[in-house]
Amino acid sequence: MDDVSFGSLDFHAIVYFISIKKYKDQKPRTTPANSHQPPTTNHRRRRRMNHTTRQYSIHFMLSRSIIGFIISGSFPLASSLKRIPRTIAPSSSSLNRIQYRGGGENITTMCKSEHETTPPSNELTSSIWTWEDQDSFCDKNHIGYSEVSDPDTFLGGWLAHRYGVDDKSCWIKEAGSKITRFDYSTMPIGRPPRLLILYGSLRSASFSRKLAFEFARLLEEVGCDVRCFNPRGLPVRDPDLESHVKVQELRALTQWSDGHVWVSPEMHGQITGVFKNQIDWIPLNTGSIRPTQGKTCCVAQVNGGSQSFNAVNALRILARWMRMPCVTNQSSVPKAWQEFNDDDGRMKESSYRDRVVDVAEEFAKFTAIMAPISDALTDRFSERKEKEANGRLLSQAEKEKETTIQQSRKG
Ligand SMILES: Cc1cc2nc3c(=O)[nH]c(=O)nc-3n(C[C@H](O)[C@H](O)[C@H](O)COP(=O)(O)O)c2cc1C
Image (cartoon, rainbow, N blue to C red; front, side):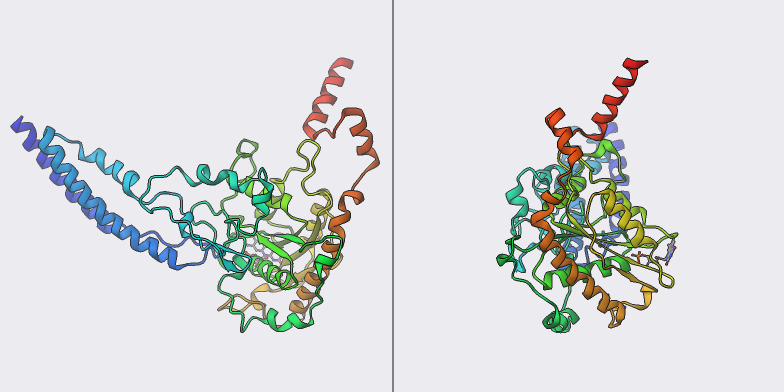
């Protein structure tokens, strides 16, 4: 026993020394390189906390090692090294790190203990990101109305366009008095148009995101209810991942919306994969429901080179495919690297910026008018026939199956 214990003690001492060195050398986690989640005091708090957690882990390992050694003389410290972070490290859910805001007000901060062991965020939060409970998804108090997405899951951050905006120097506040506004409560829509903003780049300094956020601010200025979707964390389309919480969030946002603003960079004369992937996740039909049918669409692009319209043209084709009527005006910003301020990422004064105001103003009007009539507008003769024959519209997969069965019968 003594031999084993001393041998084990030597082993523990070596492993303990190595583990302390490893933990000391370890760099703290940094802010994710995504300005949909800009550095916040919460991130700084997390960095501080990681340091504390490491110290805690070292002391915990030491005491566990000694107790284990006393009890059995051969407590496997190496395996305890693996277990410690999982038990006492902060949970993967970072809901408490989101700055929650709703309707311009701070609404709530969830008070989950940083040291509480919780299931992964996806499991914890999945039901609130779906369209199952429509009332709570539409509610202004929904936790997605935050300025910063969850740093682990990239959920929420629907008000990312408000982050760091100084109202006093904001050009939109200045231009605001000249932009047409409507009292939506007196129109058939009866409430502010709900607009979803999608953009097609994950780059931290992305100009398409900067342009998308200018659209979001302008549309908010004219009284629309605006939500931005963070494409980070959305998997590449794979039907096996339909229940992924980012997919659920995107689909629910689409169902919630009356219209979309699509902003893609032009790359190789086309829209980006990041952008197209988002649309590919939105089903053309789910049973007899077509999630995007009749919702309005507004298209814009940024270019690295001189003026080009390839991306907006592609976006229009995509909108047609999704059965979304497009507003006629559009924005294409050439040499985008010249058009945004380096410091705050805001768009510089130019004719391109004036065009963005034109497009946003027109789109708000277009959506307010179209939303109440979209069902009537998209009511099709062929679909009424199909409903009469089958009781409902068939999905594409069902139609394909039906054709295969008919062909095999003929064969
Ligand atoms: C692979 C690649 C292909 C590109 N192709 C084009 C192009 O065909 N036309 C164009 O005007 N700019 C092109 N650009 C420039 C991008 O449109 C420009 O850098 C844009 O700002 C990128 O979008 P982001 O800032 O939102 O990430 C290309 C850039 C890359 C990286």
